[in-house]
Image (cartoon, rainbow, N blue to C red; front, side, top):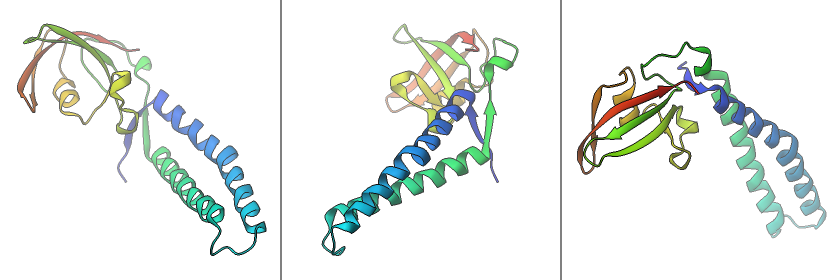
Length: 158
């Protein structure tokens, strides 16, 4: 079974979602199903069918989260001695050499990736190009618009 790399924060978020699904959503849906059953004929009961659909989704999500957590390899980058090398979980600041623009990204697991929060998956082309490199190195990344060069300016273990 393959391990799924995940930051400590990402694992905690999944645990919180799992707890919410089990303790809040699941009981709410069970109540909705019971209430819909009380209305009579289930074949034409839209509330019943909607609640059953929600139940199916929630149960599927619970199984998915439990599977991910059971296979998770939790990496707390703050426990690793800081260095200038880019590793999973670190925050890296890069300079786009062509546009002279700086970007800061945290390299995280697939489930945690969110570009709005400047978190990129370790499997993304940019992260794959950065991992293992050190401050001052220039990396080339294939992009839809062509090859882009970035210089690694800073690596932080946040």
